[in-house]
Length: 157
Image (cartoon, rainbow, N blue to C red):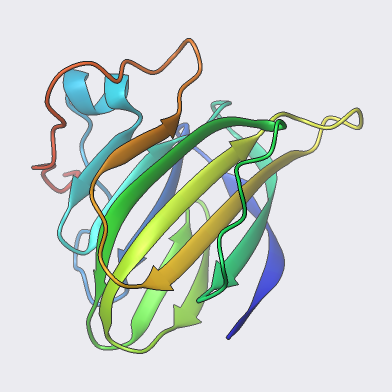
């Protein structure tokens, strides 16, 4: 289906993917969700970014084969994501990018890339039809992949 690149400003150390129809799309972080690197509930997934805030280049790949994780990827996480009503948003509290997708169950893989020599931060986002399990694909020193995942986030209030 293709992909695109977008520049976006991330705040509060998080990159979010959520259904546009949610009244409260952002998640509260438990101690466990912070440690595992993501806060998840049906229709909303928040991922812990490498920095507190700043500009990021987001590369979005939709229904494309996911390549092997490159050596430049510092942190990679995969979670299930169900699209309803076709409208999804990617971004952070400060700004989002709208996306229209066919309804269905997706595998959502987010890869945080080591900053380039210019200091630019990049994130790869792979959205592929078909379900998946929760998985830490690559963990840096900040991520604790031991124990059960917390997959019951509550809306940030």
